[in-house]
Picture (cartoon, rainbow, N blue to C red):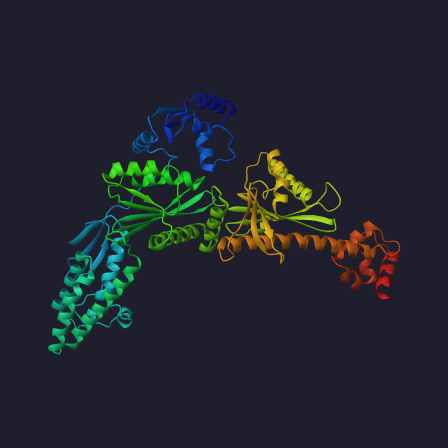
Length: 605
């Protein structure tokens, strides 16, 4: 966006009232590209046209396309929410979170062929009996899988009118193999009818008494094969009901939300419980998320915008902005009292953890990272109070020996793993001696100078989090540097114990203690060990080269330049020792006389 247009919009935003309302962003063609609500219009809208350093890429893109905006003053934040929801539903702006359910309806099909089958169907084009419609493909697939397992129904396309050799499913106990020719069409249809009853009842346990009765009758008439089939069916239903208890909850109807974040990408996992059972699960990916507290309200508004089935209880993994207003909106929409709950312990907390694990796994699959790293990063963001989960973490450490060979190491962790292309080394140049605070300030100053130049790819991107090897002193040393460069990145120190292990995280407000069994602590410890290793290895390498070079300077006729050329060519003193006079003489600046003296120095010791 041109600076003049930005100034014009900022000036207009500064004239807005500090009252609740809805703002409508438009592009040059007058198309609505974003609709938002605010407690105070002026405060919210001016943020868009101020500094862009805190904006996500999505917001920067949106702002760059804004040519004008309109606003509507409301009497309350609740009224603004209702109006915003209505306007988003009507206009579907491209930069709002829009959760489109394009799954359609799903059915269970009992085919019309002679040997009927039970299948999943997305439409009603085929002949047969349909059970449904179901909104959730998860419910349909789960039901058909359960029915096929319990009743050992065939899922192949074979004809059962003529006997044939059974497939692998029979041998592993997944199918009773009517293809063998030992089942009549009447017996087969009786099994299909029982399966349909199971689907329609939605509760296999209620069938167990009649199944037991039929099993006993079959045994009395010595039909042991049929009795065994019924016994296996009873056992399968019993096992299924035990399995279902794992995903059952005390409360009859509730929706559960939990989210995992990586940089500006969020994955929200949703579990729907109806009649105390898990009936559906979905996950949604949303890009351009600045912070969880603001994001959740907009997401939930869109999730329930076109839904009528709103349960009385809605669980979340954390608090978010505008919870009370959203609760009231949902209650009025549903025509009943809706409660938003953040569980702290017990069964409901366990369900939240299950939902959170789903979100982490789905996000890790999308980003090709492991669930372990996702979990650690989300946990770290929570402990440090970060607005978003840090995708890029930079860490710094200083290394020297009594002020000699004073260096620093910078490492980068991307998505919770070392990103070695981003590693950089620094020699301290602005002073001589030992001063870790001044060294850290110099390194960060040089790092952000490179960011402003934009020439080095590793420096051209700002980190989401900076971790310094040290405590409050190091943090205080670099804060003026961040201010000088107008950099807004959270900074923390990694405090060590007497055994050089991470003890706590230092911040401006004091130490933050993290339990050693937490994944966030493991990640911090890994970062601290890696940055220490990287910095000290560079220091030792320089010190070693200096010591080796000084050995060469003891040889008559060999000065600094010649010693440098020898080290560049042979890489180590051992290689120089093992070189012949002729090999030494090939080095730039080394004469035959020099080569002879070097050879004699190392071989006559």
